[in-house]
Length: 105
Image 1 (cartoon, rainbow, N blue to C red):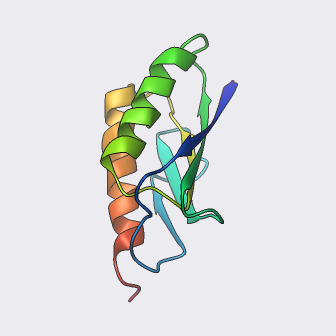
Image 2: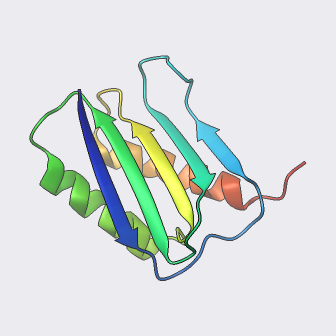
């Protein structure tokens, strides 16, 4: 398992007040995305656990694109890719960030 860490400047802070959001089933071995509130509103910290070694440059491009397009400032994101392709991970990541922006029930 390779674990990649990214700390990216985020131009737009995440909205909403929900403390966290989870997409996927924890410890299922499938794609899992956990989004939590962090400390710095202008930073987005992302950790990716992947079994596919040697794809750091690809993941760097994927997360940079994501943070550039979404309001991701102030978030900590943990991803277990479960063998999913980066484009699939991007979709689930967007879903998790939308969930954190929703009002708590």
